[in-house]
Image (spheres, rainbow, N blue to C red):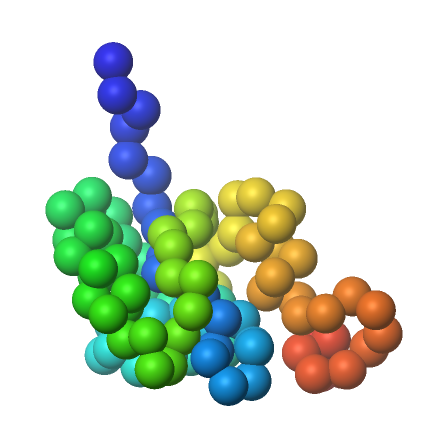
Length: 99
C-alpha cells in the first residue's frame, strides 16, 4: 500500500548565493519557510516540483520537503529541514543573527 501524501514545500539552494530557498505560491523564490507555498495535493506538488527544477539558472538541488501546516506558516517535520531553515551552524550570521 502506498504511503499517504503529506504536506510539502518545494525547496532548493539559490544558485549564486547558496542560501536555502523555498517556492512561494506566486512563483517567487523566498528565503523564509513561512512564505513558502504548502502543497497538499500530490499531483500539484509534482507539477510545481518539475517547474521549479526547470529553473536551473536560479536554483539547484530542488526537492519536496515535508512540513506541517500551522497558523504561523509551515513548520519542518524533519530535523534536516529545521536545520536548513536556520542557516549555517558554524557561527551566528545570516538567518541565525536575526533569530
